[in-house]
Amino acid sequence: MLKINIVCVGKLKEKYLKDGINEYLKRISAYAKVAITEINEDKIPANPSKAQIEKSLQREGKEIIKVLANSYPIALCIEGESLSSEQFAKKLENIQLSQNSEISFVIGSSFGLSEEVKRKCLFKLSFSKMTFPHQLMRLVLCEQLYRVFQIINNGKYHK
Image (cartoon, rainbow, N blue to C red):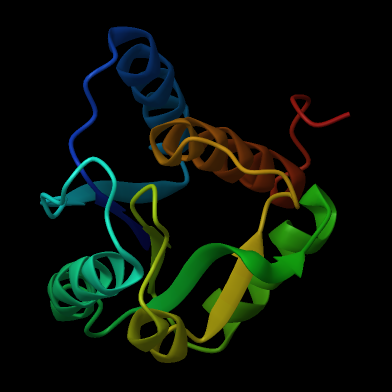
């Protein structure tokens, strides 16, 4: 069974997001084993300088990289490639067919991901040119993963 690790910076606090994510995780469990790894968000001042942001991203990046071993890492970032749901399904099928039994999706903090993490990832994925709250992206990713498995298995969910 495919293993999926969603690596996120920060703790999820909103109940409505947790409820939505848990619903999709339950649905996905028929197709893959999913784990969520939360990396501590670095504490920085309210109006940080570029240098403070960069230092924070580097510290978070070191922790992210530690959990990516033995997986096919995918960074969620605005400069990534945009895919349709069908293309996303094909991409995950191809990754699995190339003997990768574990895929890690990386969601950064509100400041994004360090360049080191982006370089370490084998694919960069963009859900939109728009900016979304990083905590909401967990729910969006889980919904799209469920949709992917429905596409792959000819389910009724995807229209």
